Amino acid sequence: MKNLILLFTFLITTISFSQTENQVNREETRTVDDYEKIDQVVIDYDKEVFIAGKVEVNPEYPGGEKAVFAFLEKKIKISKEILEQQGSQKVFAQFIIEKNGRLSDIKVLRSNSPELTKEFTKALKAMKWTPAKQNNRIVRSSYMLPFQAK
Image (tube, rainbow, N blue to C red):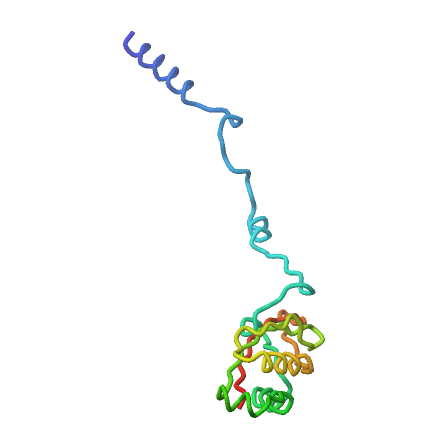
């Protein structure tokens, strides 16, 4: 009799704690392929703006950095009076190098002279760069450039 009561208690306990599949809150079963698809990010290479320095091939002005500054020094015309009054002027600009190499969205971030800002922006618009590349595709990239007028 004692064994029968023990067996009956065991059966009741087992049944009461068992759950059907519908009652279990669990994540749906996923395969490794499903997780790989989740991790993949879809990039629109036509619209995305990559950061220079974080791409496979960085944008470059033909001739390199020295050619950039030589071009800017040649194009930027600041009156000697302004330079004498305020000393040498440092200016910073941020811009986007488009897929065709032209510059867009030019923003002068720091400048003490409106004349220098105007000339610097005008000179940047005249430049044509070799655009950046990511995954073997030509992409748009942002770039920051300091310049010191003398």
